[in-house]
Length: 186
Image (cartoon, rainbow, N blue to C red; front, side, top):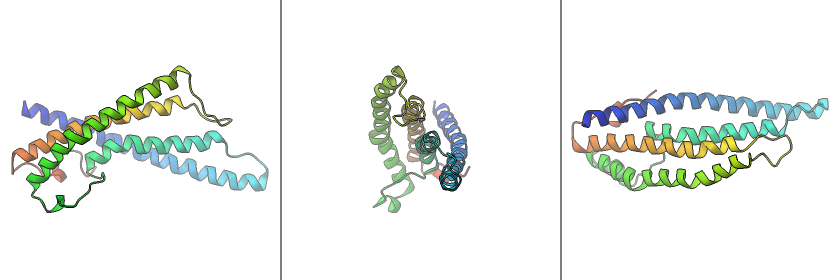
């Protein structure tokens, strides 16, 4: 059973490592759209042409939202998340693993489940009315709102993987270090 849990956690981490690579491309797209928006506004003043629009501005905002939301699970997988380190860094690796395990069970997993649960009514309503932008020429809002519960579900899955890895490290002083685990450094 332990080997199956380890494989499950490793497969979740590998998935989020690949997702993180895809999100990096979204970051590039966001920068390119933002550069186009800035150049279009600047050139539009001199040429009299409308080179930018609300759709492009909202696309940039949507891409940023996707980078932030979909990158959260990958940040957790890579250990790049925010950690309040008052005493943690001074503890043994085994004690750190126990803190990570308990933190995942008590804080991370309930937070991710609550976030997904609370987002669902808003997303459902947005799809029901096919919510659009209040700005002329803007993009529909319901697709981007759908990313919110998906992101919390992905964070929940990575939280399970992190809890399994922390449990493994806490149970043995010879367990792998977080840097040596699958997906890190990709």
